[in-house]
Structures are given as C-alpha cells and as structure tokens.
View 1 (cartoon, rainbow, N blue to C red):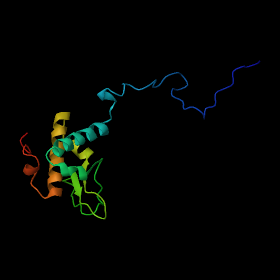
View 2: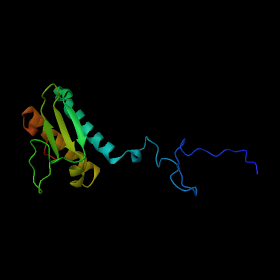
View 3: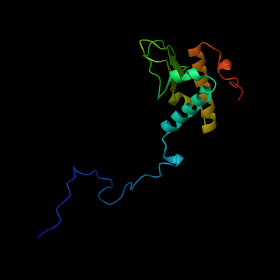
View 4: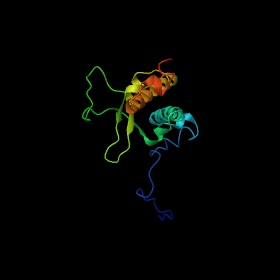
Length: 149
C-alpha cells in the first residue's frame, strides 16, 4: 500500500487538540474583552490607576517604581509580621543607585475584598499609605479623600 502523505512530525508543531478532536480550539475571548485579562493583570491595572491618580498631585512619584507581588516573603529584611497580620504592601527606600519602590501584595488584598470596586478602594488605600510612608507624610496629605469611602 502506497501512502503519498508523509506523517507529520510531532516535534515540529505543538498539539492543540487531543487525539479525539476535543480540547481547546482557541482563546475563549478576544484580547480586547475584559474576560481575556487575568486576575494579576486586572490587579496591576488597579495599582496603575491609583498611581496615575496620585501622580497628578505628586509628580515626584515618577521616580518611584511600583511593583505587584503575589504574596510577601517572610524572609525579607525589615518585615516583622505575625500569623494574625499579613502586610498588604511595603516600601523599599532608594539606596545604592536603586530607585525607591512601593510593593503591593495581590493575594492578601484579594482575600480581603469581595468585588472589583471594593478591591480598587483597598488598592488605592494601600498605595496611598505606602507613598505617605515613603515621603514621610500622612496619608491624608497624600490624598485628601483618604479614608472617606
């Protein structure tokens, strides 16, 4: 029996479907739809929105790096926290030519909130508190609307 079709090399292309033709055919939603964004990406957008709100009033925030980490590491120097309290964010002052940083921890914030609006408010409060700590000001000075909602 002559077979004119040569078999496809399995190493050249990844298999997207199983041998029965089932499996994911493609993305569930197009990239421009909010459903396509992961929880981490949505959280990073909330932090960025909060920073942009504050940068209008405090232009020196452009010199600070804002980071999002999933959870705090207990071995970080200077962090003292117990089982009852997990930090929602922290600041790292500038040293050795490195820029100052504000870190917001995603999972502790997500656990304490129920919806997107509540999460956005808590993210903004954490960012305001960390910026105030870094600048040596009170949170009410950094954002006059702090604590109102």
